Image (tube, rainbow, N blue to C red):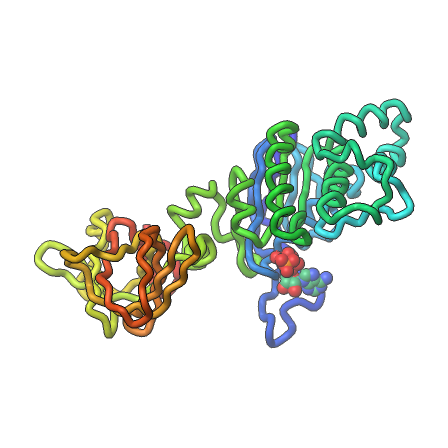
Length: 370
Ligand code: ATP
């Protein structure tokens, strides 16, 4: 059983929280997560949110300030790193330069005293899974970044760890290699089904690889869910603004009631958007909230549109899609369209918003309203 359970985990570094620029006392603040046997989870968040610290505590490379970590039924807090049955691959490949690829992959098995013929069998079993079978006689210096990372991951899984920990394994690779290895990691996981925790700040990586993703900010878990749940139903303003490219538009709004309907209105703007009916029982005339809408849920109306006239402030043609930015009051609102029209800056268009697709967040806390 390689279920990973993290319960109320805290990390406080000696000097952290003392600087004026970093008042946050905890690098990891009351984190609880459960990763099922064979599941692939991603820990995602901006720089400094506590991703690596969490991974290092699971690996036993960092002391735990408070809380517990279990693998299956075993509490591993006090186990030596080598007794945790964990495979680790970090972003810097850290291969041993004087050893061949074969010896690099075999290194930990040798150290554990596994017999040579068993080592040979295991290395040759793992090498094709990572497409390094033709590299076994080479020295690390002659490998590309992508090849080094493949060897690094092969070395981590050859011991058949209960849990595989990957920390930004693609971050040193260029675009094409990144994409290729990302696909390989997905395929590898489908084949070996090893419980995996993958740390990244890249939402595309997390979305494409993970069964579930844990989004962190300032040491605090913001949401843990499938990529779809996190995208469609963000728990708070931070998650809404972090996931999606360009991110969700989030605007301060005053709700007004007109006849039997509620509308979002915006300072210094004519725009009115019909509120989603599922929120009607909570809404009141004059209430202030934040409204979120994805750029894909805003449209340019046709000639007969009853949408609100606005001027194009930004137009970006990315070939597969076009991005249009318009001003709503002082705010820049982005939309994505597949319509092939090339708009000019300053041109007037009619803005239509799918009100049912909007999200509501509390003005003070930023938490999703219901
Ligand atoms: P990145 O994506 O930049 O690697 P991260 O999300 O992995 O960031 P951590 O490296 O876990 O974040 O750092 C979390 C917080 O703890 C940051 O504020 C960081 O400055 C602080 N921190 C990390 N290591 C130490 C240390 N050894 N001593 C003091 N503070 C530390």
